[in-house]
Amino acid sequence: MKPPIWGLLLFSLIALSGCASPMKQREAQTYAQLSLRDYCAQSSPCLPARFVKAQHLAGGWLLDYESEKAKYGVMVRESGNTQVSVWAKDATPAAR
Image (cartoon, rainbow, N blue to C red; front, top):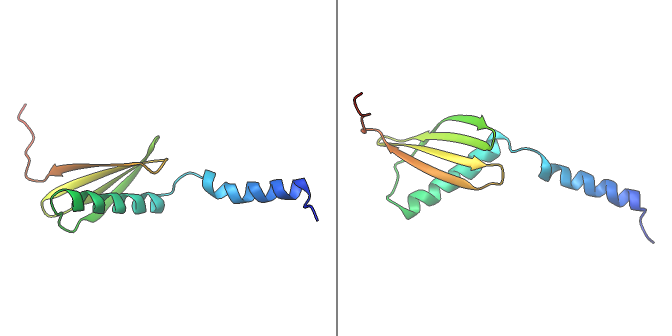
């Protein structure tokens, strides 16, 4: 028995609608935590970092984390790609 083509099309649209939806903050936090964990495993060990804030930007999410000695920024793109940036807390800005 062959299913009707409209039924198959409707099923495909429903199944793919979850994949096409924009990334939510919780999903971005998951990607960021995994990326930060991998970054810390490959570079110097990071102290436990706590989540500070999230900003939704045009290209994805920017999530900020903080530990005793450093601040971490993780950019999570809509595609799921991530980039970790690190700033030392004791770094003082240059005088103007």
